[in-house]
Image (spheres, rainbow, N blue to C red):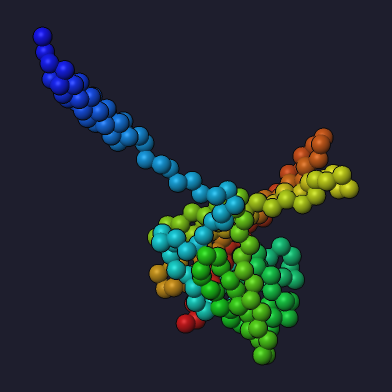
Length: 206
């Protein structure tokens, strides 16, 4: 008959072996777990500072040259085909009418700095989390959707989609194409409006 100390040592050996194999199993299972996926917050705005986006900052002529077959005004005949208008960035009417150049600042978004007769104004392109930005080596595509109305006091909902394409050409000029699609919606019907399309080339001045 085996002595008591021998039985105790045998049990200890088995316990150590069991613990060793259990540890190996746990480590193996942990290594098989999928790597955690980082999800972006839903409130994060798209950025134009991604490495894939071409750098388009610089000084440009304010009023562009309409491409052949395109309108030489923006939305109405009294509005010039300015870079501010094409990008949907507000500018005081007197600056847009009198100045000849505009500075485009390229960071997370686009900012247009207008100067004339000592006055300076700066306005940024309004990007929201639901907007989309696609960048290529010489092109930036921006898609924005804006809605107004749709409440009890104003049941008619106006939806505007803005598709903008900015292309850097070989001589540094900026080719801007803008397409605007509007429609009015209510609880009973939807009224589409023919799209507006504009295309202009803005010469770089620096």
